[in-house]
View 1 (cartoon, rainbow over the protein chains, first blue to last red):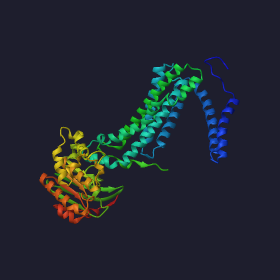
View 2: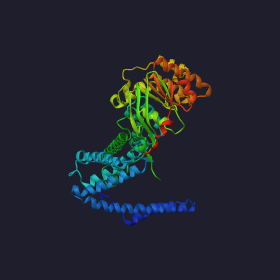
View 3: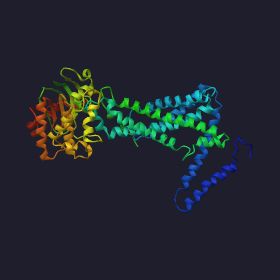
View 4: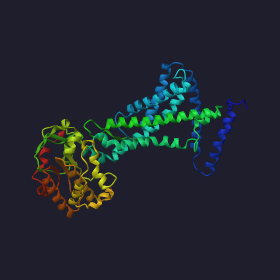
Length: 269
Length: 218
């Protein structure tokens, strides 16, 4: 045991003991013929490999001291998140990828840079040890919001096409005809983060806060950080959902107040 | 009144009918006939501006929809779809809906007239508070027709206006359609596959088959 406020390092033996917890589940799976042991083993190996790799990568990334050298890392994160976000919805339209990338880049970076540069006051604002983990958290939630909102918007326009066109046919502007699907989709994108905010600290203890406390941070400081993070991810997810749905709306309704339904297509399985 | 100038309609890359020029005079009822797939519904949707015609254009009292603004044009040239489309909510909420659009600013909801029109189309006024989607398809189609008249358009575009009705209800709805259209001096372009209905309701019928001779791949 080391002194207060310092991290207790974990040895390889400690890791092995932690792994043995999973072995209990593997044993039960074999005994009950649940056929889950292989998946559990693979998932455990992937967890170790991926986290060791990201640990190594983060060490290198945190050594970066100039913004131009950091840009490829940011771009990689944004591209991966945008690719994942547009890959999930069952329907798509031409230009969805660039729209998602643009929306997520602007909203996530704006929120994260506000936090590092203005709220925390890190010098310089792009210090990777702060910018990268914070951007990762914001981006992860923005990605979910954008993905859910886009999926819901395209699904609604497909299911309610006749309703939207009926409104247009009676003189509604494109916005008047689209506002219900738009509002529903934005709401759908924001549900996960609103649910998280409702139960944070009551049902769930956020991973980052737990990590900080285990790493020796004063719980009061950890809580303040967590509050900031919650506001950041709420802002990222909601701005991302709104931005994405509004840009999709602009792409799917033209200035002649028509719904360009033929642009929406089912994703190939 | 409403003029179609050299309109062509398409499905994908195939032109279904082309060179369609029709002038609809005030108070005139014109039927659009022809076999399935000849482009009748697509033509009606093109006139309503829900899809672009492959060629040609429209004029309403000499002005193009772009000059008028599409919402204003659509408010004056109202399309009633073949399948009744009502939103969740009461019959009254569905009737009020188009009066909430910016193009209707300043026009209050004429509730008395709504009740009269509903009754004329065979829907009891007591249904106003009922959930619109709980009505039968036939009743829903009548509500949609009443709503179209309530908007006081210059032109009605009706796609198979009696398709959801029982055979015995067809003649009474046809009667109301004819009476209300004439009484209000509206023009109507009516898609129907039923030539007898075209004869009963309309001043003249246009067979789109004639325009199919020009059909070709783009």
